[in-house]
Length: 153
Image 1 (spheres, rainbow, N blue to C red):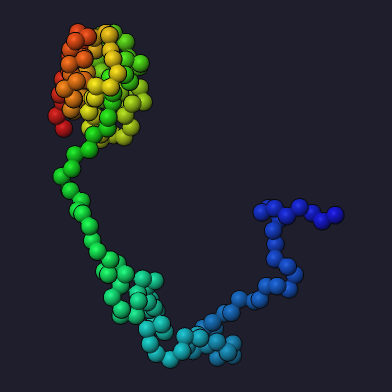
Image 2: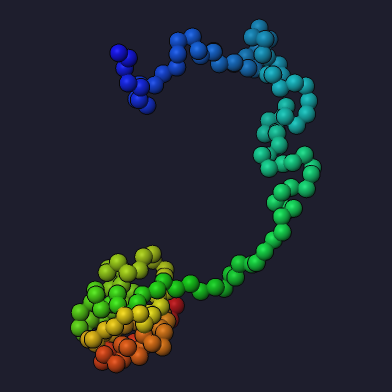
């Protein structure tokens, strides 16, 4: 019975490999002087050749397709944290800032802006320091006896 073929023991069949064509090694090799590149032209030059997207002078696909929308360079993106997440991970009277949220695994990344949203309920007071807060979240935190501070940056 033949051995099982895996990636570890793959090898080409005997006599199936050609020797590599060594070009530019003098006239005796048969591949000297122009090194199989022909005489002149774009492909004979070093660094020459056409890029993969070149279409022979035809209007390229990228320029034929319509463009839609735009990218707002001033867009401010927030990472969202809900009240139910705070209720599960923090205890009464704790101060919840960016470091605490990062430690609890609620936000990732170094330069993030955090917005507190009002999904869920909370029954104990917390001091929350975030970049933005929804009206319902602020109301629920204050109703539980806590407070929300808006931080800049």
